Image (tube, rainbow, N blue to C red):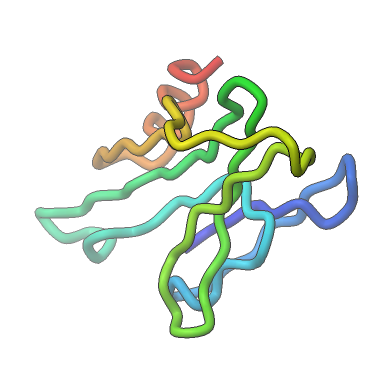
Length: 107
């Protein structure tokens, strides 16, 4: 598990872990190893929170160790009951190619 999370307004730091409970608040990038490296089923998944309209998203872990998607507008008066394109999720066997392809897809 590799994450990049916002530490200050303009800066992100990487962190590593082994479960969803290790995902820090304000995570903007998560790369998960789904199967052991070197196995015939080696696979990775990437999760990228997105900006959609007036809303931005980020990932965090909950108190019970689950992955949570946080959605916010920064304005209490801006509300919605529908959000399109809140998160991008993809998987692949090469983590480097997966990362490149995923960032190209959301750019």
